[in-house]
Length: 400
Image (tube, rainbow, N blue to C red):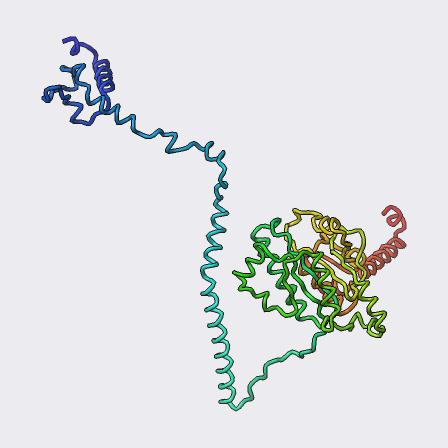
């Protein structure tokens, strides 16, 4: 009677309290609570008959089951616990995309080979069809243009590319360096006067790329040596192969040494220099000398590791020098060049013996380089024009 007189809201709250005290139950258990004799004692939402105090074995069961449930902190560690772990940090979305693209590129390597072969076959078929068509019309087939082949001369000079910077580069920078190294071989092979090309400290992930993605193509490079020794030990080895009979001829820019007698030639070999090229050096490289070794730092780092090549050479007691860009060129950007550009400049100098000509042929136009002589002539012309204008209006010229 009292429950019927209570307000509805209070009665509902009381019923909720009863359900909470008896633990979570489904719809059936909410309306029936078993007693000790196994009979079901009916209840309803009005709570006319409440469960007895001794009828709590279901609650004890639920409590026992809850005791065996895992601790939420053990199954789902917090974010702070993850960040404080000793494992590697999770990859970002950009890194995951790069890895997926790289894996996709690697997986299609064989397919690209098949495509290249198919294109080569199709190219031969087109040439064959064009020849047959010309013969059917009574026309002479067009002769393929052949470039004049000249015999390249090996010179007794060595260019070493120091590849001992593997741990300072990222993956994309190693890819760029591998392409630059390949370009160095190509430029030297096409030159009329060739140098000995050496890759020293050749190992790590750079060598792994050459051995896998590039199919060990460096092993077929003619006139190229790939060594695991450092640049100091490599320079000592270079003296031996340059002094050998097949080490090279004193031709081209070295022709002035060709008439030396044996005694003076041996002295020339002993005076061969070892120079590490660095833009931070204090002196300019005036010329390349026979029986000498010139070392280029094989590093692509987007200017993060400033002066690393200069320090590396200085610590080993090796002379450093820079290309004489400042003497011959006016640059609108930094004078630091890529590995293959430095190599190509020296190759061009071996052909012509003129730094200005070598710079103009190699330095990219985007760097805005111009010969100082040409710039000087232009400045003289500008001054002359200004002087003539000043004669017409002396006051303006005086104030300018």
